[in-house]
Length: 635
Image (cartoon, rainbow, N blue to C red; front, side, top):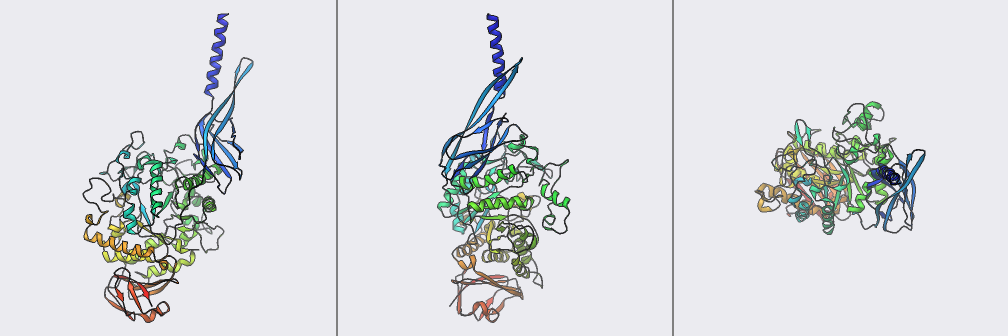
């Protein structure tokens, strides 16, 4: 009898252990929470854990309907479609997985019903994104290279890249979000209204061999967990704190979105939901980086198009398959979650042309449906206005129409660099600028183009123009008076310089004074050289004038063909008329108002907004060699 009891107990223990081994375990749910009152009443949950296949999903909460549960190739994932009734209220509830586990013993089937729960919350929407438009000045910061506000988060031994070394240009340097927050007064004083940060999402990537040099992912473009801000930047709370502090000062934040790829160390790459979550090739296939294979709708080959679109950007950045509807929803919902969770005001989309363009329209529209004035600008490093226009809202009659409001204006960027470095001629020098603006007929709203002199992927502007202060002022003046949404790269205002030689790290140097113990602090005038203060004060004066000048935001731009090395254009609305005179002539000249009477009629004097000097006679304006004048015309 005792032997029989022991035998039965052993069988029961064995069955229990086998049942326990098949028990579903939920490790995470994305999005991590959601909100009531969204215009789209649908939400798709990604549930990840162990042995989830075969589970029923239920939620006992008024106003939530579980529409469909999807099992995919990997039994550790479930995708669950929810529908929210209009009367849904905020609150907390459990997501319940119920799974019947059976075990055959002899001729009998022994079963057990297992329940697993995971807490979830619906919150009240309290974020109201501020509109980013042509009245703003955007300042681009690479967080790792700007300022270190909290040295305790410089490195973590449990991360794939545990090092931090400011002496190595390819490793992390310790800049963080608190460091940026500590310098908001500097930025506001400069005239900045909006920050664009290179990606802040977790990049728990190992160092990678790039051209024979081991480099870290300090730049941020290899996400490893969409729902975490990188600990080395301060984490989720530091990002919230920064954005709250910015909003309190009337400033705005633009987040860098990466939809095209993820990091090779992304948590999903260790256990893919399905094989086609990323683009798969029989052998490694890199994108061609050729945008013409996308916009050339008449002549391109299908093979070139597919390699460009589905090839990987680099070997350590797997290419996401946005044709997979689960991938598409995951990315779109993360964008919406980011706006509501952190309060971001706009988006800069990295590597736009490499995404599936129908997906991008779907993603943009989801954001615009919830936030109709959301600023979305697309990065396409292209050479020609036609290809730049193709990827955004345009006036082209084509079967594909993009709904992205704004391009990163690479044509503007290349035109100003070339114009300043060339001798004035029929199609050179400032003629490049007038021709560039003449092509605005391609864009639905060129006043939303994000214009820039340099950024984290470009040679530093001061080096491009041969470290010439006159050219620097011409470039800054054109940026801040031309149409578009101007963007300034961190340190340009204090003449940071360098070419991308031997690598991008050369144009991503630390901002001097951002670290305790720096020998100089260029956040303050006493730490800057005379030339640096001249550049800073020029930029500050013009940026702050622009901030309050509606004519430079939305006023009509009228340009006159450059002549004798002088380029003149006007910005005017009902309240102001501003005359911009740019000279790349080697000699001083006198400019007669007769040619410009259609814009100057009725004005008898003007004020140089940079020097504050009054011009009481506009009949003849003296134009020094290699100079710029911004004149507010007065009656």
